[in-house]
Length: 399
Ligand SMILES: Cc1cc2nc3c(=O)[nH]c(=O)nc-3n(C[C@H](O)[C@H](O)[C@H](O)COP(=O)(O)O)c2cc1C
Ligand SMILES: [Fe+2]
Ligand SMILES: [Fe+2]
Image 1 (tube, rainbow, N blue to C red):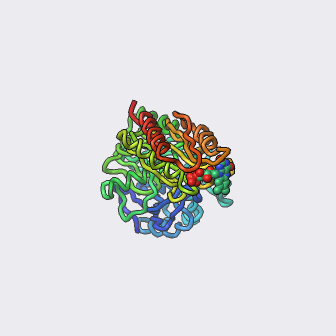
Image 2 (image 1 turned 135 degrees about the vertical axis):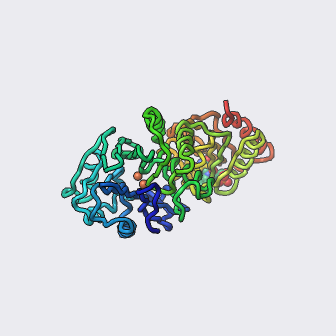
Image 3 (image 1 turned 90 degrees about the horizontal axis):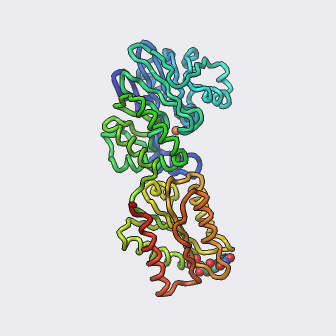
C-alpha cells in the first residue's frame, strides 16, 4: 500500500504486515496480522513521526517517496524506541542524515543502545509541554512513561486536533482500510481489546492517570492515529471510553471456566460448573486450555469478572498445559477479578492449591473454597459441581 492522506498535508506512510501471527514471542497471537504506522507531516518543515519494523524499512521509504524526497525530512519524532517502530530509523537517517530526532531522554539513551550509528544522530531531547513549530502547525510532546515503555511519548498537533499516541489505542489488525469508520466494528474492538489485555493490562493504573491528565488538558481530539492498526476518526471517543472501562476493571456479568484434564473427570466438573453459572443468567464460557489460544482467553478477562480454573492433579501439581495461561495472567495482573479453582484427583491432591496460589499471585481474589473431587464424579457430585458454579454466579454479577 502506498501513502494515504489522513488530514490535509498529513500522510500515513506505514506498512501492513499481513503475515505476522505472533507478537512479542509466543505469548500474543495476532490472527489478523498488524500494521506499523508512520506519519509524514508536510509543512514548511517536513516531519516523520515514527519509523517501522526494520524488514519493512524499504516499503516505508517508498511510501515517503510517493509524497516527498526523503532527503527533505527535517525532523523525525520517535515516540517509542521498540524495534517495531524504531527498527527502520537507520534507513530513514541514511536518507536524511541532517534530520533532527525529537524524543524523550529515555528514548535517546535506548536508541544509543540499539543502534551503533545513533552516535552520529542529531538528537533533541524533549519533555512534556515542549513544542516544535513546523510551519502552519505546532507539534506538542507529552511524555507517557510506561505507556508502555519508559521512553514512550505522545505527539499532539493542536491545529489538526490530532493525537499520535504510538502504541496506545492500537490494535494488531492488518487491513486495506485505514479508518475506524471503514471497518467492521466488532473486529476492530475485539482486536483493540486483545491488544489492551496483552500489552497494557498491568499498566492499567497508569492508563487511568494518563486519561485523567489528557482530559484535564482540555485539548480537542478529533483523530487518534496509533502506531498499529486502524486510525480512530469516526469515533475517537469510543476507544478512550473503552480504555477507561478496561483500566478500571468494570467488567460484565461474564465468567470464564478454564481447565484441562487427562481422562475427562475435570472436564465433567467444568461442564457442570459452567451449566450452574449459566443457570443464574451469567454469560459463562468454557475453555479447555490445551485446545485454546490463551491470549484470546486473556482478552476475555477484560470483560469477565469471574475466572474459574480447573485441573486434575498430576505429580501433586496442576497440568502443565495450564502453566502458560497462568504465567501470563500472573504477569498481566487483570484488574479487579475474582476467581476459584477446581479439579479431580486420585490421592494426594495438589492441583487446586497450586492454581489458587497462582490466581492469588495475579491479584485475583479467591471468592470460594476450591472444589476437589476424588476420581470420576458420580451423579451426586455432578450436582455438587452445578451448585458450586451456581453459588459463584453472584460474584460475576453487578453488585
Ligand atoms: C501421571 C499421573 C500422575 C498423577 N499424580 C497424582 C498426584 O500426584 N496426586 C493425586 O492426587 N493424583 C494424581 N493422579 C491422579 C489423577 O489426578 C486422577 O486420575 C484424576 O481423577 C484425573 O482427572 P482427569 O480425568 O480430569 O484428568 C495422577 C495421575 C496420573 C496419570
Ligand atoms: Fe511497543
Ligand atoms: Fe508497537
